Amino acid sequence: MNTTERAPAPAGASPRGLGLAHRAYLPRTVGLGIGALCAGAGLYQANAPTWVWGVLVVYCYVWPHIAFRMSIRSVLPLAAERRNVLVDSFAGGFWAVAMAFNVLPSVLLLAALAMNNFATGGARLFGKGMVAHVAGAGAGLLVLGLNFRPEPSFLTVLLCVPFLLSYPLVLGVVMYRLSIVLSRQKNALMLEKHRADEANLAKTRLLAELASRDELTGLFNRRHMSELLAQQRLACQRADDGFAVALVDLDHFKHINDSHGHAVGDNVLRAFAEQAVAAMRGSDIVGRWGGEEFLVIYPRSTAHEAALGAARLRERLAAAVVATPAGQPLTFTVSIGLTEHVPHESIDALVERADRAMYQAKSLGRNRVVTLTQAMAAA
View 1 (spheres, rainbow, N blue to C red):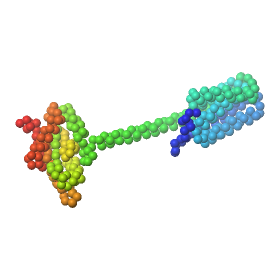
View 2 (view 1 turned 90 degrees about the vertical axis):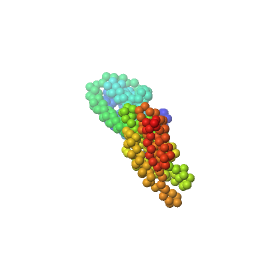
View 3 (view 1 turned 60 degrees about the vertical axis):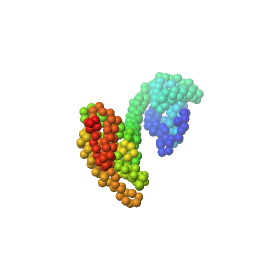
View 4 (view 1 turned 180 degrees about the vertical axis):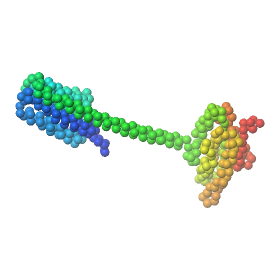
């Protein structure tokens, strides 16, 4: 017996082989019950002793129930059921001798038992069953001696007909039920796998989303914004369309940190993120570029169209209020540098021009939007 058969079943799980014990109960009960007619016919032809008839009755009508109880009460039902199958194989060899090797009932019984062996444990159990047949035949020869009457009588043929008709039908019913069980198990496994795949996909998406976000503000981080800029540039090249970019810098942010502490500075950054998201159109994208700098992408927009959105953002931020530890309201402003992408321009050149525009906004007094197109920069 292999180690997997010795291992106990996990808590709450059905012992391995319990289903097999239940599936084997009906074929064994019906098969041996009807097979008693075949064996009885063979014993009658062989003039078997009276005690052999008693053993036949016990084996065919009592043993199936004992075998079932032994299997379902065993800690290892699979191993118990395989032992029961080998007992059946041993008995088959014995009955072949007891029937004086009467060809028809012997072949029917031994063939049915061989099928059970293979169905229960494959080629390995089939081989053990053949050995058990020989052992049972040897035991029969020791007890009963050799009696060879292979020709079946007409009565024997008639009594074998019920077994010929019923056992394949019972076996077919069992296999049909087994196919339904296997189909349900397969569907359950597929559903479980589908749910696991969905959970893994959701987890992957969540991890990807977390990896693309700035921890403090919840906005996209610089790495992800750079990827979005590259995607936007590629999309515009394909569609022959343009987009605009704005760099936003918080005015006097160092003073806020020095005067009120970094906790208040963090609250200002969070307030910016909240107000910026509220000010965006559905297609606009905002992310943290670094420190107190933020980058906004305005897809399918000219510099003029994006300037309207940037002005709306500046006004909304100027009206925002952050509380300080002393309970005093704190307001803040931003300087915004805006530009638009031109065909075949690199991302670095685009962002560099927006940065220049942002510094112009600061030099002009802050709290304003400055637009710098390529044409203006070249002038």
